[in-house]
Length: 415
Image 1 (cartoon, one colour):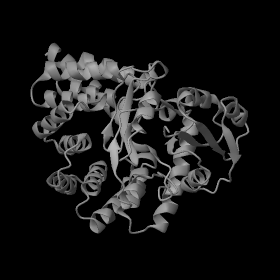
Image 2 (tube, rainbow, N blue to C red):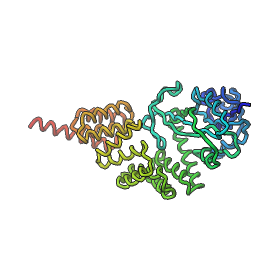
Image 3 (spheres, rainbow, N blue to C red):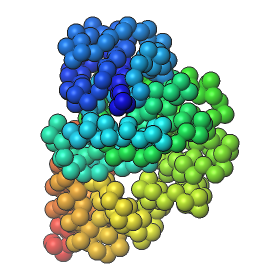
Image 4 (cartoon, rainbow, N blue to C red):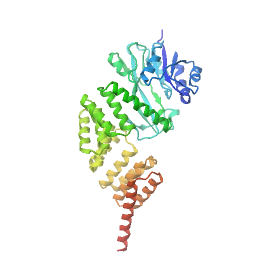
């Protein structure tokens, strides 16, 4: 007999995107089981239209508990897990049916492509990459971030989800020493790109709350510390709080290159450059020279005025294919400081044109243009920046500096 496949999901008010998800997977699975945690938007009727079995489950502020409630009712040989805001690649379903024929594998690790509206975004170690537009549903988004996940596994009693947030079966499979393999089917995730700002803010706040709960239950778990540190750094924007978490993780697990790296990132944002460079050097000594590392290294040297070192770091970042409008603008500013004025100015202008809503790029270009004495570019850039709104004291100072340099030039002409 051929092995059977079950789609396992938890859903709440997923109607706007659920049809896309089910349409991508339904033709390839033998059963769809959805645990609904309180939908009021017709999600249950939509799911049943695809032949899904829908059960009501309580929401207990724990993603693993919800997923495991659904897993407890599994009836097929293999489990495929998707969220409502995801879909399978068009070739993914057929590929999965091939993969589950293998007798020796208990779980497959596959890529998840997270689509982004901002090409400068990062998730963890990974920077956004240009969207190759392989999928019509994702064609409008400029970038994606690929991350590994484990979404296909055997219906085996010992495999279940762990963690109230950032839940995964990956660590459980590893703990059981079950054989795994890498798979090439892609799960496409649209949540970051499609969520309205308020909805994304609410999700981040929920993840923050659950992350705090997870850490409280596992205070000496380096992974929980890292997850909470990233939440504090990237979502709550509290680098000092995040630093304490990363430092604790590095103390508990000195070989955790990620803890050293993100401690360095925090210290860069706190403008504590010597300490930042020490942590980054430790991360590099443990072999973690990723895009995040070169970005942080470049930023540390940029803040310190070490423009040759900063330039080298940003060039290495670009060699990894992880450049962004921000890193390109900083590289251009380095080139201006190093005397390559025309080249650097052109690079910065191209970066601003690529991300015209990114206010910080205008600030860097305007300051570099002022430094090089290119008043027309400085004036044009500041005016464009002010049209974006929300000016700060920095912009007032910059306008004053441009005006002062303009007056000096006029005085020199008169003399």
